[in-house]
Image (cartoon, rainbow, N blue to C red; front, side, top):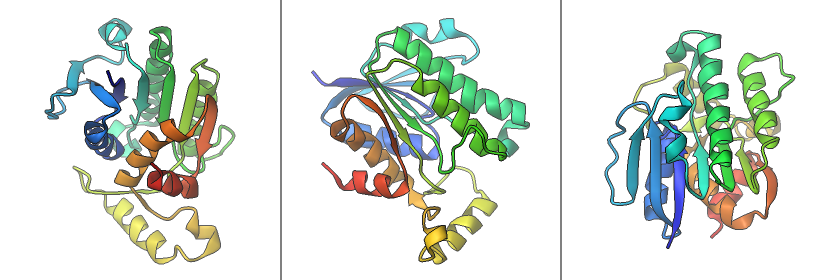
Length: 219
C-alpha cells in the first residue's frame, strides 16, 4: 500500500506540476486535493475535497495521510491587499499544517521562497520567513522547506512582470550575485519535493536553489 499525499495549492504553478509528478510516483497511491473549488484533475489516485479555509470543520476530517504538501500562495494584485495575501500565504497554510499534524500526518513539505526572512523589510520575504519560523515549531517528524527563486513554467494567467524578470535573470545568471535568483522550472521543484522525502532523514531541512536543482536529479 502506497502513501497518501495531501496537497493544498494544487492549481498553482508548482501545485499543478506536483500533482502530475505524484500521479507518476509508485510510492503514492492516494492524492487528496483540498481546494476552494473543483480543480479539474482526474485520475484514479485523486480524491478531491472542496473546503473553506476559513472553517476548520470543513477540512479537518480530510487530513488523514502521510505527507502534507503546501504550495498555496497568492500575489498582492490577485489577493487585493497585503492583509488578504497574508491570510492566504501565512494563515491558511499554517492552520492547515497544524490541523494535519493533529490528524497524525508525519511529514510536511512547504514551498517557500528565496530570501525568506522574518526580519526582512520586504513584505513578501518577511511573510514567507514568518511562515517558515512558525511551521518549524510544529512537531512533524520531517519538515522540508523549499526556497526556489522565480518560478518558470506555463501559468494559467499571464504575468508580464514575471516573464520580464525570468528573461532578465536567465540572461544574467552567469553573474555570481544574480545566479541564486535565476529561474527554476516548476517541474524541477516538484521533482525535488518528492525526492527530498527519500533523501532527507527526520528533522528540519531547508533547501535553497542549487540544492533544489541537485535534489531533482536524485532518485
